[in-house]
Length: 194
Image (cartoon, rainbow, N blue to C red; front, side, top):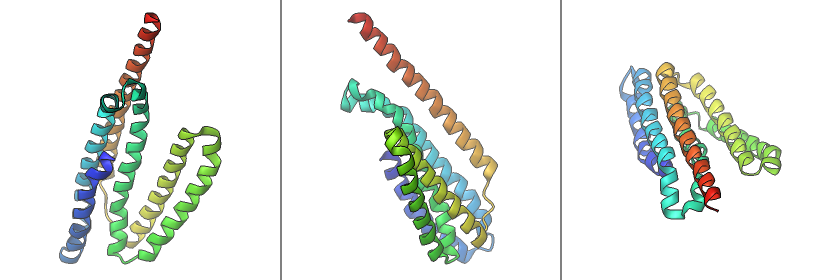
C-alpha cells in the first residue's frame, strides 16, 4: 500500500499538468515524454524502497514467523508501480478524448483477468494469482499504450525508462536474494539449536 499511497499525489498532480500542457504548449508531447521519465523514476524509487525495507518492517510488526512473506512484496509492489505507470497512457487518451476506448480496454483486460485466474489460481494458488494479475496488467497496459499511441503520440524516452526499470529490478532482485539467504540461514541456525 505504500507505493499506491505514495503514487496518489503523483497521479493527482499529473492529470491537470498534462491537460494544461496539452492545451497551452505546442511541444506538449515532447515535454510530456520528459516528465513521464521523472514520474516513472519517482515511482521506481518508491517501489524499490518498499521492496527493500519490507522484510524488517514485516518482522517488526508481524514477528519473525511472517518475515518470509516479504519475498512476495516485490511482486505486489511491481503491480502497484505498473498501475501507476499506466496513468501516463490513460492521460493521453483522455487528452485525445478517447474515453470509450479506455472503458473497452478496461473491460477486455478484466476478461483476461478472469480467464487467467481460472487458468492459474486453482493449481498454483498465491503464485497463480500473481501470474493472473501480471497477465491482466500486461494486457491493460498494452491496450492503453496501443490506443494512446494512435490517439496522441508521445515520444517516450524508452532507453531511459528501460535503464531505470532494469536498475530497479536488479536492485530488488539482489535485495530479495540477500533477504532469502538470511531466512535460510536463520532456519539452519534454528535447526542446529534444536
